Length: 533
Image (tube, rainbow, N blue to C red; front, side, top):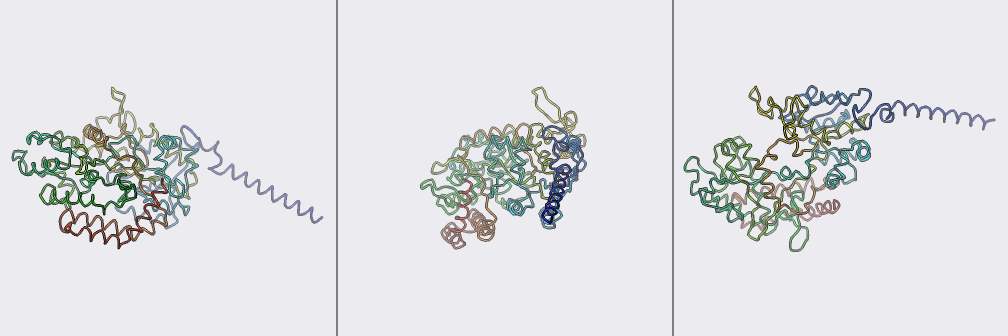
């Protein structure tokens, strides 16, 4: 009898648990897929849902995404109402950390400039949910991009094997965008000086020297042979002429020794010393703008507009420089003293792997993945970058989407960037979507930029490494030794160039790096590179 009673009680408990489970399956938004979520098409959900999203607010973007054309339209399309928490960039890091540490999480982070170290830390803690399976089932646009371009999948996959975010990325084939600032010289000054376009570091030096000494402007301006907003564009351009960073910018200060094939910390190499000697020569002879390390960006732009620079490394002169922009012509990658000729800068297609992250608080992860995936397909790209046909853009005679006249020629005298921001949210960058030539209207899409990219492309770094991704343990180990070493390299680079530290002390600089823990630093970097391979 006792056993029969126990059997009946067990059966009742089993029936009750099954009923509860069945009820949960019907009621749960994640499981009532047929009634609640549409796997394709619009609306995404059949009943309205609400999400709260933390959004980084760049100065150039629309100040309130709760009432902006693009997302008002998308809410109607999707049946998903978004409450945007706008966080200005000035306090972004602090507010982001407060949100992550308080336990009061939003449903997602959008354009929040989330560091890779935080993506990994909070991903492993379960704050950010893994998206691997969700992408496979609910993100056809992004899944197709990963299948077509394996470097995209590699770029968003963390060392633990998980994908935690949708990225800010560039079309892998949009090389002009991925190559960064490019070199230009004044073609009219070359003609006055009776000089050909420089093709070697020595010819470039001779051109800059002639600009300084022979006044090709005819006294109209006080010529500055080379100008830039800071030293890094020139340094990045010239390092490839000395055979440095031969695996691209993703490797940081590591590349492969061309003679041995071993890993190399190139800022202690003999070729690096030669690069510093060359740049010091340019600076000491007044061929580089002398206040390059302190110049305000507005002053740099003013100098450009006045036509003072004989050479620049920046973005489209045709678009940026008012009266003299058409006088500039692109430079090829310069051949260095040993014949090296590498364009080393090639940004990863994945610029930020965590531009959109879904948190554990989100009750609708499937719908949220569908929501963001739209902006990686052609229709979503057109909406995100161009807006709505008939309101912000129209189709021209070539079948291309172009902004309407009230955007291009503001009746209020506003720049096109400020007109964009009335309707769209991409100005300011950091967004989860893909920059493509079809819809991107920035400097990198202009004819002079595209032509210069084509000129440089034959010398583009071969088989570049992707940006190094470290585990949390490695990141913790690098916080001391790694930060100090990288900071010291930059400090000494600038001192050697300016001359406040003589290059006679280069060997002492190398010994200091070794004492700081260079061997440990190298081992951690190599470990991460090998893992990515």
